[in-house]
Amino acid sequence: MKRAAIVFLTLLAGCVELPEDKPPFELGDVAVLPIVNRTGVPFDGDEFANILASELVKAGGNRVIRPAQIRAAGEPGESIQTANDALRLGRRVRARLVLACAITDYDPYDPPKVAIATQVLRVDAGPLSGQDLDRLLQSGSWRRGPLSMTRDGAAHALAAFEGVYDAQDPETRRALKLYARGRDSAFAGEREFLAVQSRYLQFVSAQLIQRLSSHGS
Image (tube, rainbow, N blue to C red; front, side, top):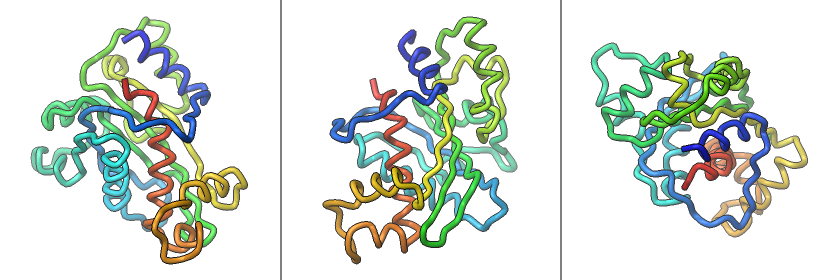
């Protein structure tokens, strides 16, 4: 538990990097919430959530609860606005972790760009000091995430981070080339991932999972 708190604070600082040859990991049972669209641009959040869920399964054989299953487990008119709402549904579907994401910037045209804010909650609360709770509640990453946080909910917080995946950025393009290498593609190299929205979201999902992988133990 102490390690989880340390990893959470490290992620807030943006210091976690995953080696490209890191083996598959286990996050356990993960509930992937419907992805929130904050861009004003049409975006299918359920499609992205399902792509992310599929990439989680590929990464480590996790049991993943998808948005449709989460909605089916909810009460009529029940919404997910706060960390406590998410935790209640997480318990209902027997998840270990709840993954919440919000799209904050989106441009589907080549070269595509996706900005995403991510929050991870443990269904079982972990010990955090009062100082760590205060730091979490004041964190910009948590404030910009899809779920509002109370002090009670903060005891379940595991990570909050943001990422921008802009295909014009040289580092993002380098990562995309590495990701596309060895995968079946209708076009040469990364071209399919740049031209087809669902394929670029697959790449973004893989990058996000790299950030999550430090919580696999």
